[in-house]
Image (cartoon, rainbow, N blue to C red; front, side, top):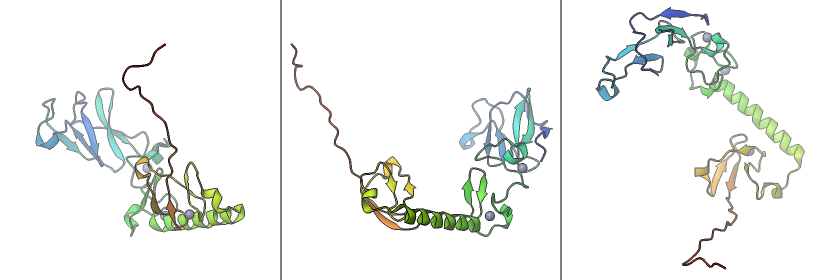
Length: 198
Ligand SMILES: [Zn+2]
Ligand SMILES: [Zn+2]
Ligand SMILES: [Zn+2]
């Protein structure tokens, strides 16, 4: 796809500015729950003539333009529109239509299941080799400011709402371990009754 693609959409008025995107579909004057849009204009839904295009209002008229980060060389991460040619595994180039298993999302597109497995295996081997060199002992896993796997020393991000004592499985090495959260006491004081003054 040419990054300079610019195809006029004659059926959409340049006065229509209320557009949203749902997958590759562009929707003008979205009628939420079947009720007409608050601007009173009719809802119109259009799919681009080619995958990877989306509608953009340019100088008062709507055009189909390329949204593919690779075609546009924009470096955009988590790109929303991908053209057919670039809808491939970022590592092995397998087209999405040829996949037999659900792929893994990636900022630069997706990683197919076999590539993800081999990436994971490499990460595990590297982490365990590094661990063996580092001569850790159990004290290296006590009272830390982050959750670190005691098998391979991978730091595992814990969301605040998941901060509780629990059994974990390391995302890198698959090792099982217990996580214990310790809280430092903190002190809050408030005056009772009348404040004592000089
Ligand atoms: Zn592309
Ligand atoms: Zn792949
Ligand atoms: Zn681990």
